[in-house]
Image (cartoon, rainbow, N blue to C red; front, side, top):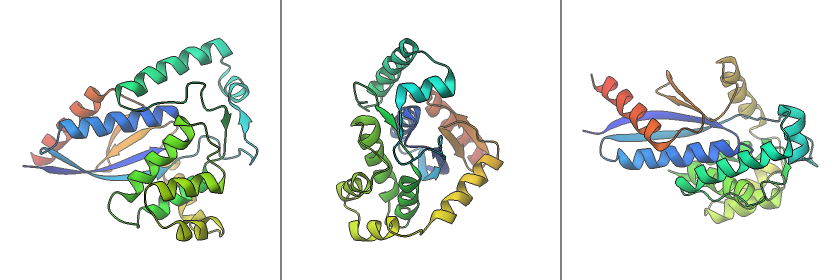
Length: 219
């Protein structure tokens, strides 16, 4: 018997741990194939909503925001790269380089949820590969539209979204909903609207949690 779980993956393309967490969640679901099926939705969360169009040097940003040193940042990058490799995600060797505004990416992800089964998931992964994997400027329309094309979605329709203010209010409302619910860091994985799994957890943690939640739903 397969149990379907609604999973809201609250995250930001600017968050490397979100790439790790998504990879781990995917692998956990592969292990639970036949037991658990995911109704997966990607929800917006901006780590740096005030970031300007020019972005900011990554090391400078991390020092200002978290007080970390370049040496500490390099160590964390190594840790994240190793965790990414475990779940099949290849981070850019030198890091992202700069931090960029991700609001337009979130607008396109919101648009993609109505573009067919799996479209939002595919686009999310394409955005992560572009920014976290290749250190591209994820705030630029050409980068976003290249990802749209990569996953076979309608580039003209996506460009129309970017050229307008479409979906801005919808995305801000979703972000407000999750911050009001107490989400302060990402990834935050919310199962069936009531179970929270925080952070880029290992595959085993996601697997055990989903198995327990599914068993509880059946009971």
